[in-house]
Amino acid sequence: MSDILGTDYPPQYPPTSDEKNLALLAHVLTFVSTLLAPLIIYILKKNESSFVAEHAKESFNFQLTLVLVCIGLFVTIVGILFIWVVGIYATILVIVATIRASEGRAFKYPFSIKFIS
Image 1 (cartoon, rainbow, N blue to C red):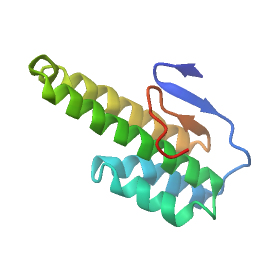
Image 2: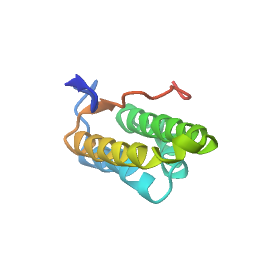
Image 3: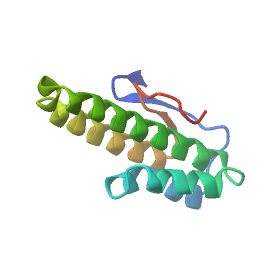
Image 4: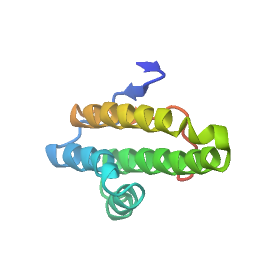
């Protein structure tokens, strides 16, 4: 599936239940800690699980992109009116990414700058 809600595809190998849970947390915890949670998960698991590392990277890159977009919108008076649209769209994408992680599928966010590749 490739569209405005992101792209999911089969992972390199079937992830374990623990890997699915950590990948899921890399997305869900962004509601509490925007950048810190996926970054910590990535740093801790990048050498142990490529599935978890990929989800944590995608989550971190997307969240950092969102922060930069919101700063850019906040600088302009008209942009302040549209920040809520970005927030709703981001929430929907995080939910979709969480579902894909729980299904054991790899996921790529749309419109995300790859700060960590």
